[in-house]
Amino acid sequence: MLSPGPMTTSGSIGITGYESLHFVVENLERSRRFYEQMFDFKEVARAGDDLVERSGQQSVVFGAGDARVCVSTPLSQGSKAARYLKRHPAGVMSLSFRVKDLDETIAWLEARGGTFLADPLETTDDKGGKYRSVEIATPLGDVAFRFIERTNYRAFAPGFVDVGEGHASRPQNRYGIQQIDHVTSNGLTMQPIISWYREVLGMEPFWDITFHTHDVASDRASGSGLKSIVMWHPESGVKFATNEPLRPFFRDSQIAKFVEDNAGPGVQHVAFGVDDILWSVEELRKRGVDFMETPKSYYLALPERLEKLGITNVKEELAELERLQVLVDGANGRYMLQIFLREAAALYEEHRAGPFFYEVIQRCGDEGFGYGNFRALFESIERFQKGREAAAK
Image 1 (tube, rainbow, N blue to C red):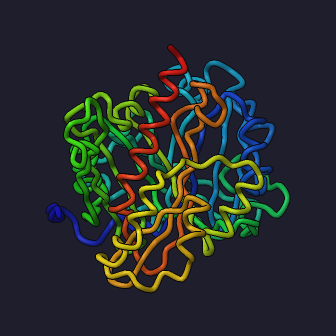
Image 2 (image 1 turned 180 degrees about the vertical axis):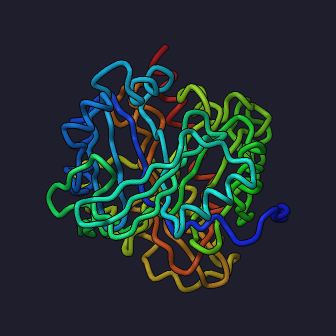
């Protein structure tokens, strides 16, 4: 495992949790159908008329429990959304985090060399609620990080108006989606990203892995591999996984393909936490949600692997895990269950929809990232990519 980097200031950056992710798309109505009809997110806010006119983009906020996704589409070529889409397909343009005290967060970032994109924003609503935020650049290409302090401020953000239950509610989700569990990003080289998490944000190493399909089939003429490091903020539990491709077949890695399809590094996927993943996946499949497939060999080897890991308390039937294609991993009596949706480009059969995808995860005591599941996921992605390439020829 990596060792934490030196601390140059006392305290911490003051993050208390994920606030939201900001997604940019060309087809807002398609995104609405996905979030509302397939994922049962509720529209909780939208950009008001004044903000739409000033920003040149339409924005809608969807919510489930504490999870918030803001989706924007350009109405003018001068908007942030339009500039993003000139360089990338649909994808995550920014991530927002709640902080205890924005002044302390800014002081922390200034002392550690954070790059501010604008002066801090501060506003109050008609009931005296206060909203303060600041945005910084990241090593993830055009992805920005925003830090937000709220004091009795109910709206999603300045210029937004509540819809339905409103942003301050905790909309019930029929699939049990409660919160953002973690965020994973891809780049051709991850050390600048990891160093930035450590030196600028003050995060610490949590987990790492090196994996390649070549490891188990060295005679293969192709393959896919990665190095992955997870950094976290221990006080809040906020975690970031970062992946880079691994040789041999560096350019064939699905991580390299993501960077190519995304026209640069960026957020590969976001995981939503649920309490009963088997029920959630069963219901999501009924609504037409398409998940990545897992090879049968994964489930044939699962009983022996769980025994070696010391996991003898899995409550779920292994036959049900296989039927629903849910992955399981962990160690010493603690486990986690996870499944991955297909990337947006595959869901919509459209390259401009982007290589981003979602994960659904249930934690049963294990806070890891599925060491033993990486192989199954990679082989699944590899098969799909090869099938898509063959179909295109």
